[in-house]
Image 1 (spheres, rainbow, N blue to C red):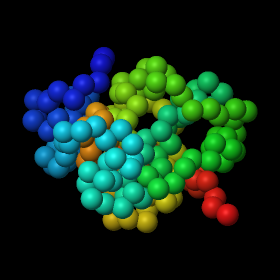
Image 2 (image 1 turned 30 degrees about the vertical axis):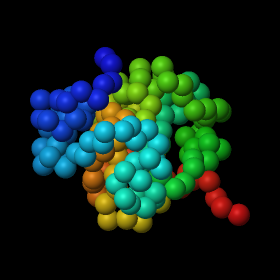
Image 3 (image 1 turned 120 degrees about the vertical axis):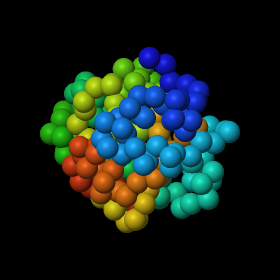
Length: 171
């Protein structure tokens, strides 16, 4: 499956796999809230600039490999993941950032467009508590051109995530 910015049957521009996941979760109302941008918003900073919101209101969906097994980490856009804290949380020997091919294989989406749920395969999900600082966060809708809004607790629930503290500590 390839990820494209082509418009799906809903007209939202979101990836068809993600639209299907929204509908299967009973979240049809979110399909109409997907925002599509003419320029890619592959990074949290690009998405925040396009939306005109704080960087911390962007939910990054990052795939790591914990002892070779994919794990999704949901992090606010203003923070960085502390890989050692992820390793400790999972009880893994080694945690590394997954490459582009591994991300696409595990999720069905390309880096820069990975949504927090609606993936090709089921992965363990860790959601950093920093996301809860906002009433609404924005996450990728399956392409580097699309995002959708959702309450953080609902997002974590639909992602099947566990709330954890895995962001880098500031000195």
